[in-house]
Image 1 (cartoon, protein in one colour):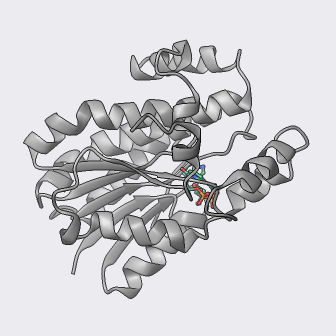
Image 2 (tube, rainbow, N blue to C red):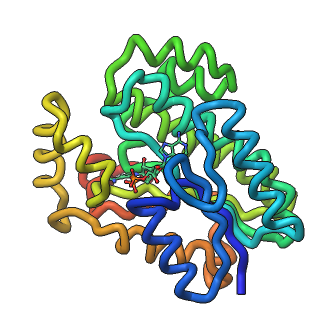
Length: 254
Ligand code: NAD
């Protein structure tokens, strides 16, 4: 049986994946701000360090997989919190635990979003994230809106994944990301309840080609496969699980 560590395992997609992996007989170390085996706030350096040290203490012999699922919605405020958790928190935890995953020739799976391509690659906020300058990225995002803050953070983390695929593979780590579409979770409930973004979200949901909204299990099923030995040759993929939304919006890009 495998041993996994994951962030954002308390609720939603992460909660469902944690349940599925545990039911499959695997050990899961859950890191979250709310509840879990390691309590840590991934928006801060102190919290990120606590996350890395907490996992290291519980898995000294290495990890078969690491899942970076924790994330904040476009309605979170201040906007810099979205940048801190969705981009810098992910990079810090993945980099901090890379050697532990390499020890077992394991895999890292990052949760991006199908909103990632909605912000252009050359957007200054995305570029500020990718430069690794957290203060600059947090300053840049405060001039934008919630949608750009969120989708830009997801674009940046997907790009980070692609840029790091080769060095990670050479180090013995299979790196991938999943790009969920609209999924019924507490995060989505917060967006639906928002005065500004609620209607946009409802319109987007109505446009999903396959219809409706994903359940957390729709996403977790695919993530569980991507983590498994059956997916051993999937490396550097951004896997859309979005009912066809990305194909609808960008038919000529893949
Ligand atoms: P969720 O709110 O149920 O889960 C997010 C988890 O992250 C929670 O357990 C929360 O406690 C944790 N978290 C938040 N801030 C944290 C912090 N500072 N430190 C540590 N943990 C923190 O929402 P979800 O929809 O299951 O989201 C999971 C991931 O999926 C997120 O990265 C989200 O951006 C992504 N996603 C969701 C959707 C969707 O429609 N729900 C679509 C695309 C991508």
